[in-house]
Length: 64
Image (tube, rainbow, N blue to C red; front, side, top):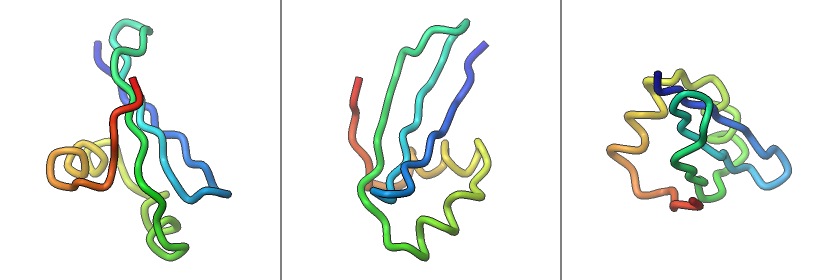
């Protein structure tokens, strides 16, 4: 079962997205820094919102 976990970094205004398969992280991404308003809005994103973000935006990079 694949699972997505999103961790916000409030001081840097970034998000770390980790994809897990059977409890093991297989992919990790970090967003670029957002404005304060954008960051606050994105804190309410759902898992589907984040998956759409990864498919359509270029504001992140692979960490792992």
